[in-house]
Image 1 (cartoon, rainbow, N blue to C red):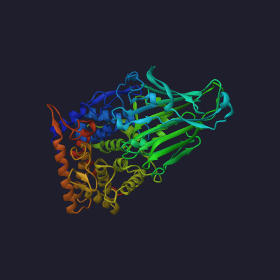
Image 2: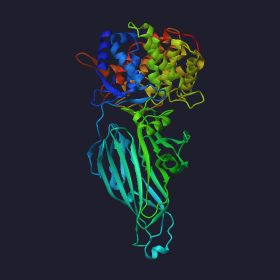
Image 3: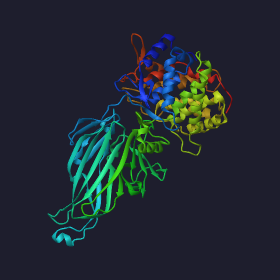
Length: 625
């Protein structure tokens, strides 16, 4: 399987990747990694650097730029030091304080290094989104109510009326609001004057209710404090205060996942439509986690931690079209004497990325946000970092400039710890976007050392990957997942030469259509005008090139018709990628799409697709699992 680039073209592509190298601080130590793009303030993402680290494990690429190879590998291992979902990336040097771009509480605009806040506090609405997202991705912190009973202090006829518990709308009663700097952050608040309608024309003030939202440049938490103060001559009993999220169903991708934390354990709601009114939890709650459907790496997730779990009375959801629209946490607070005050506190964390272990990891961050230390709090999947490190260890004997033994030992220890932490067979299957690179990592680990643990895990993950195929033979949520699955199946088929693996591989190749390229039964990715992104096309190209090489050398059995079909898709991928190449005086770069800019992920994925990383890997090992 010859490389598809001359060494000069390869080095020009490598030059475009190298120019994205940036230095940042991680736990107070300087580390270097690839920024996602040339844009000012672009983050250094784990995925970009992991794909680049795997590419730089190709002996010829490492020889061409050993400094870049060491930098991206060190970034991956440092950011993913602890087993489990690693952070999505590292932020560049952050602003020293939150930026209040507009302090009008009716049309506020506040930025932190992680989030953007807008809204109308006069109506009790605070909108939050990740920086760089569109308004359609906003999460709305609003929709609050208060339930209470009044005792004593009512004038005239009202004093002989024993009112039942009443529910009052918080947002309809807002009488004051503000946006103001506070240390390294900002305080956003609204206050409601609560009146109890008893008789026509008689609405005595029974108290005030204040919602305070604190944001900071120090960490990505949104800290909510709710304070209720009784009127001087009234006692308030039977109190239920709420902290709510509203309009979730208005997102293009619905929120469908829910997990509730109690006593250190997470209880995940079974998949399926939500009832119009649904009780999600009753009694003490340590945490609540809500996330979108779709690819785990793209899904928004909101993690909520009540600071007094024992005060949570219930968590309820109202839904539209089977998805949550309004989610309400009801809190019990002690009864208030005349003029008394009660408060509750809650921390919220809005991130992108979900997957097994995400709820537990998010709760740890909510309890100790200083652990982030400049990290993007969104989780990344463990698959690609493990595949990168395993590829380095597999190819290390072929490096012209050997990695020192102590460094190799540390890399092996890093990989062993992460492999040992993978879910056991009885756990819920991982998504395809993680299963495919994990199969690749275990394939490389088995070829490197042949540990029985790696053999068992490889069969486990491979079985889950095959089980994730649709009836049409497609994998995951698009071409990137599908191409990664083809590569994983092709590599593993030489170690597990069994019919069920080859059948899944044949179905995956057959499911590809040269037009676009596209998956059978799926709409064109990115729309007809834009087409799939370059990283997705490169993923398909790499997978099919590995299949073609194995079929041509007789190591897997594919009929000639299917091989010819695969080559048509390869040609289509090459045509698209070639049209997206842009030449500069001293370098060559690939655009992320028809209308995109160049980025690190597309650059690294292209190098993996047009060079021959899998031929070298497949030349080692070969012991059947």
